[in-house]
Image (tube, rainbow, N blue to C red; front, top):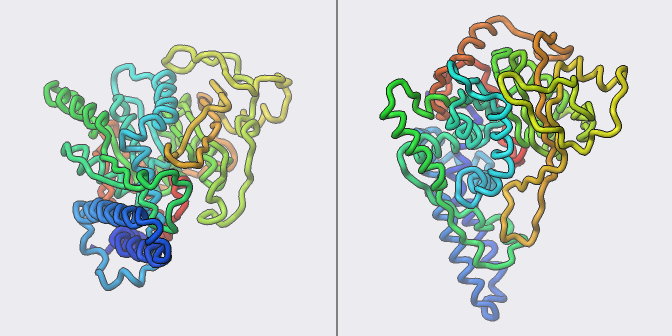
Length: 455
């Protein structure tokens, strides 16, 4: 089977990681030759780094071999691909956040906040489970958590690196009660940066985390023992491609759209808002949590787009209209936003913009603290004060101007995507054509080194 250039580049990057990282480490050894006599401990740290490279490389080779990609790139081609280990380094650190015990605190800050809002505003009340779309699915943890709670979870991810790694964790490790080992802080690029102790360089993490393994085993046993109960992974699917292209093809089919650390990384925050609107059913709920860093908008997104401040993105400073009782659920708590003063006048143009976009604001909150792939032992500690928004698409609202038009054949794509029984996650290029839905694959581009912009 022919594979795309993007897939070949990715596989080459995974396979070349060990050689590239080892070459960097050898250069560090060469530069340290003059100080080893005075600092013999440095030789021990180099050995720790070399061991970490081997452990990480073994994990990456497992992804390639178990996903059936061994023959996609001949070894002789690796040197011509021009790949480096930087993207792999970011992916390994993202694994810590999404799929290790050490990432539990970060997941609770962000994913826990979003999931509790989902359960409050879009409760499961019998019949077909609500469909929840998660663009920028990354390594699949939020999609998996949504499915584990009984929803039909649909992830959308444009980066093949994240697709493959997430599929490997879910389908090959978690589903078969296995674990993998990584040492993501080996610092084999330009050397350690803001590392307080050399002992921290060789920290090892197990993937997936024990909590996920325990919960999945329990849910699987319950499904096996209960007639008619769906296996949790049967409610989960991931589509490869661009969110805007998927929304254009599938139309309004989602009961909820969850965006975490995404809207500012899309390159077009207004376009992202309109795409969310196009993906939601009337009365559907958008839940957003993230910063407005606008990282990576000058790379893949060549044209500069409008950048909004948090209060501009929220667009109204008080819940509007006054009735904020979510569909099929209890009323939300009082608005916690510090943006609630002063109130708007009835003819305020910003309020008119909200009408045009077809949303009503149910909740806003500013300053929700979230860390992101933060190394707790680093000498540099930073965090985001994130913007939290819950908005509901008006029932019967017209599609706003500028929203993606519905192309020919969109009805069939919508039926496929809105099917209640979603297939398990597949990310192998050999299976991409078998994914539910027939969406345009838009991953034919060089992989980005901006890992946060991918999820």
